[in-house]
Image (cartoon, rainbow, N blue to C red; front, side, top):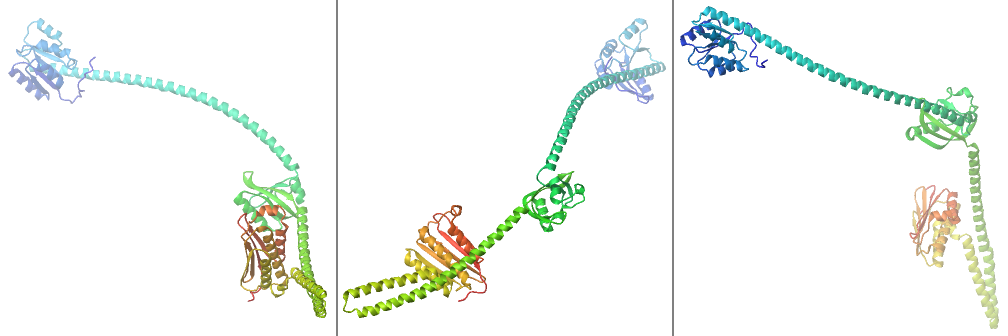
Length: 546
């Protein structure tokens, strides 16, 4: 079957007829008549042009004159039938043949029909329309056949695609089934593992509850932030004196003596997530108070935020601490009292030594002077009298020095005078340059305050002379409105504060305790090789006196 079908012809499609050969008069008559019938007529007068024109125009019918001198009719007909592009075009040959031999050759060459010359137009038109209709019918059949063939081929392609898709779907279903089986196996394993995990979790929870319930630490769980009691172990119920059925109806906020303490702890939990070793005052259910050390963290309980709290009763420890603080305050008061008594005793002793013993020594000195006047003629007696006078004068100086050490007389004139005397005395005995700087004049201090400050400076200067190896010491007194600052700084070797306090430096502790007795604070700043500064700050009432 030829693949070249030509143009599909409908019932209203005009016919194209190729007339090849013949005399001009015959061709003109045939062409005019065909044109009147609505046909398009093409004429060719050469054997070479006939196949070319047929291939190009694809006529519905070819009228071929076998007797034309310019066209070899039989050869042309054979060429048309051999060409697959023109083999389906019907050919009607026109001939003068009187015998059947020529007609047989024409039919064997591929002609569909013949018309004898001279051509009778009516006969020609009948044959023309008959073969055109046959040609069109053949064309439609061929088109339908090709359409059926294409439909069958498309159907085969669709079936092949369907088979391929079906096979692919089966493979996918098989893979999905395998995957599903694997997933089911994994899911079953996970379910078994989950059940085992749940069993372990329940067992662990039971052990945890047993440990918590019977543990020595009072513990509870409260809602966040309102504080409703969700769980309490036996020790906490015992500590707060609660019934076992009390959980859920009690708010932990009711057990705080000071609600502000709980609010502060809740804020700490909200920001930090936990806190530890917080000391709070709490109430029991019967109204008695106790001290507790609380440790808490923020977590979930039944998918809600909750506070996990551990309490420890520290009432006994707090009582011991309060007793210790009271004892310490009493010890400080006793120490202050003893210092006051000691200073009073020094003051009294200094006055007694200065007044009584000084007067006696002065009287002895005067008697020795009278005795010397009477021994003018006894050189040995004069020498003994001079020796005794020098001894008495040295004793008088020693008495004055002892009286000053017990209590400098300059303290009776204020702290500034006492510091001037102290730095002057230190300057006489040590090879150190002492400088006193006073800003703000004489501070308004009581006798005890002035004495304590003097003793602190005295102890600091003693430490400098013994240990600092300093060349220069500055004593600075600054009196402001409502406060006093006193410092002793040197350029000596300095020391390690931590090591000094670790070795129980009682001199430093004594200075700090003296400062605390008068409501002051002592600060010491020192590093090895960088000198030492001892400073004290004391609040004082009123302004300074100039």
